[in-house]
Length: 178
Image (cartoon, rainbow, N blue to C red; front, side, top):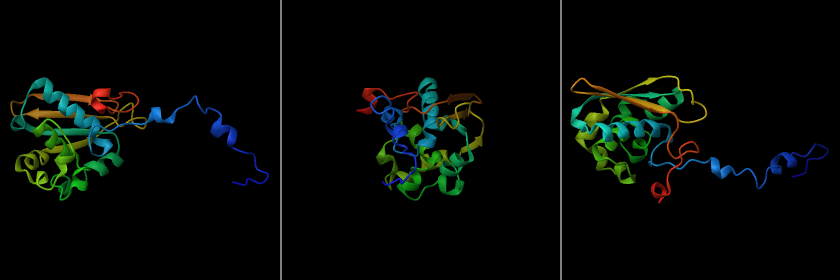
């Protein structure tokens, strides 16, 4: 474009060409859902795999998110998020996505099929998931999240992730990508 007599920004735009690869800073989402919920999903699945509980043993779950923006994306309005009416809404519902993940042990594109959105056990667990906003040291640089799972036995299990899996700080393995 013609800049007239203005100084050209070209040197700043191409000064690191060949040295600074922006694609290395990209994230690959391991779940077909809003990226803002991935740290919470991974935290919950990690706890389930370590402790071996079933969804029937869960009394309630609290997820911890870093910002009001994230809460508005994946937790509110709560009445919509606990019973999504479409796959698109489901992909932006942390309660539904977490309940489906914990019920099935995986979260795939088919988790958001119309018939999957109606499963009573998943919807029941989704209604028992609440949230709190809290500070994370990586907020603004990553998509952190945490979870507290209260079992019917009274035990409370906690986990957090300061970085989303699949991002530059925690890249996916080749097997996870393929």
